[in-house]
Length: 349
Ligand code: MRU
Image 1: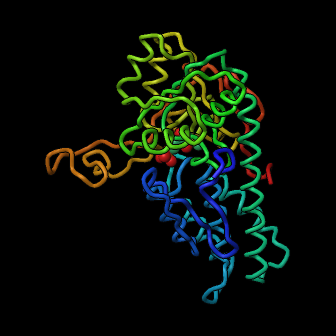
Image 2 (image 1 turned 90 degrees about the horizontal axis):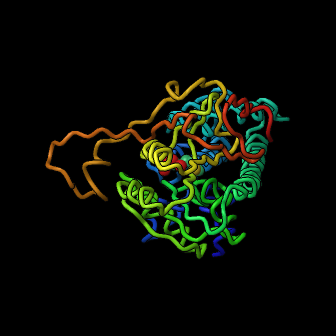
Image 3 (image 1 turned 180 degrees about the vertical axis):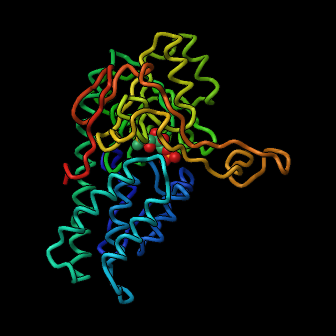
């Protein structure tokens, strides 16, 4: 597979096929989802993950609600129940809500309201358009973001924000890949990203495929890398950006922003406009997903703490806008003071 065209998500005509990211990098196994319940379960357990990709998967999930199957009493009620099901999977990534709200508008505009087969085809076509739009969005974001890189940049990133997290080349990792393509990247430092190791398992896998020089570091080693002057810029993704620019991203992002400020290193966010939520005024209003305690007390199912140890496991943290040097979107690089009004579901196809 070509690193630039690789996609972990494809639609076969009757099922959504997902590369199960919980098994990477050691096993490449595809999961076929025929029903929205299977898509919801894949999102919940992080088989499919990353804010933009969750949105695209949810769009296909809405379509699958109308795939051939048992008779549906009422299409509208069934649609709303599916929105509820998919929307309940992960609370922080606003791309999910954005896709579902957009889906509601598209569903209401279907040409043959009582025809289930036509509704299925109508929603599949829309999901495919959303999918393609994310690919184009990623590319534009990458071009804008690469302008921020100095020559021979040494870059630090967190979590996984590449092709595995979107439908295209990625958000922050897409920017890094484009900057590398332009000859501007000397080395990437990838945080391992405890507790689920998206950096260690997924980002290194993608960087290797792209041929970008990289080193993996324990999250707690980032301070030393920054203090030793080994990093020129930090760039990460986001799961929701509030109107004032406060940004939620994978747990461990906020400490990086504090460290970057302490060491005079610019800290950037790369995210599509669909990650901006103008209805959320600031970071305090962003719902933060808390996940199972076992994700912290165990590693790959093996306990690492004494039996009965309690854990605190927020999946995301919030970086205040004042620590963000710029937000890269498909529309360009935005800088403080932020007053972000993107993300109207009725705007984009
Ligand atoms: O819990 P995850 O793995 O879905 O978290 C992903 C992130 O935090 C990414 O940085 C974020 O979704 C933006 S990048 C596409």
